[in-house]
Image (cartoon, rainbow, N blue to C red):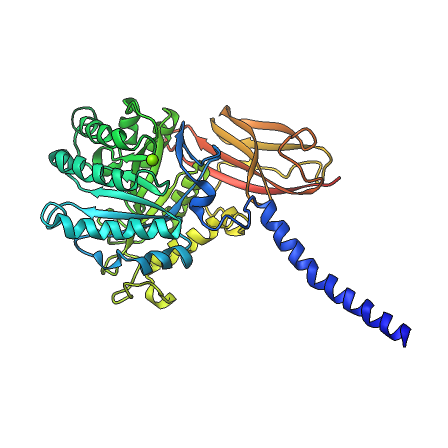
Length: 449
Ligand code: MG
């Protein structure tokens, strides 16, 4: 009998161990990913955002990329400005930011200030409750003519919400082809002064000339305030490398960009959906850690709209409710939010360099990475761990055409705490010929001790 009891105890112990192993690994995985089990929302995790150089950073100074959706003009498709829809965008789409587009004119805030403002307030309240970031967008093409109204509106928003880290101001959606220095900048200074009198720190996004494309022009004469980002808007089937070149110029001049609106379509919001160019833009934004919102949460019959006609205003959308654009963007948000997703490592356009497998591989502790540039250009060579966290920038410089060799020592790198593991090296290359094309590629390597 005794030996039978002992046998049962042994079996029970084995069962407990088997049950405990996956639990141990799953919590360990969370810890390794830097996500504590008590961080229940993205705002609790990142907290008060700041602009540091060209980068949006979190409360600890770490770079942050937010990805989400823009709602449509509030006066025309305001039905999605509600709690349930925002909750669906957070939970099913994994949006970490939502943009509320306060339509100013025609038939917008200037005509019905209370009704339009209430739609935006509902979205802000929902985002605060749900723990995601919210962009309050003065959705106007002629804001310089409505400066007083903008100041009064943003003063009210700042008083009510300026203490919440969730809030991001966007004070001029898309200026037309007007002067940065004589029209947009004076407007921005007036509105920013009003906001900063009440709220000293939350990020303010400022539109740039030509429907928020001329970020290069803004970068030549930036605003003299803290925590300012500049709006870069693109529509993938219309705006291609020439617009990325403007972005590169702006970043090289040291300003931070925020793609507060972009579409997979032509600039009209309709026409062709360009998925290849959308991919190139996505890689561009990801490699530069530029936050983005896609246009738009709408069931309008146009290419850029994410929803088909009749999709519920309260979310709970099936795949059949999503347009092609909606389906692509939802997939992008989810895969980019997952640092282990292999989708992020794929490149589907030709390269202007050869990135060779490191040697030796596996290695301990040193390895050599070789690459050959087919032209002169800017090179960024970075090491990422398996969770997608960058642990080292090896090269961030202009380099000439030809073969380059870089040595990496896993032992002397203070960011490597694991004894062994899989790492990725990432080469990002912008060719400085007329095309200014950029390309990138990842390769895995194994540190084995
Ligand atoms: Mg504040």
